[in-house]
Length: 112
Image (cartoon, rainbow, N blue to C red; front, side):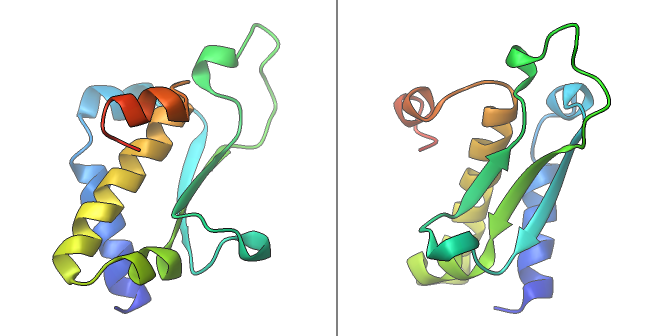
């Protein structure tokens, strides 16, 4: 799958996130990269300070970053439909980290 098509799928997954949630996302960017750093086995990564951890002194910082990794996603999927589903799950999973929801809770909710 081309990078352009994969990026479109990430955009489509974002379009499915409720507008109310997108409105309260603060100081975060979402990007697509081909591979995670150092050969890690990740489909996505949230880097930053979750909204629940931001205090009165949170100011003047670079945006949080959500990265969706194309090649690992394509390796775990057999069909384009699988990719669409996995991208949607990964986008929601990483956005949840921005809201302070940890991996354990996400797995309990079926977004692991």
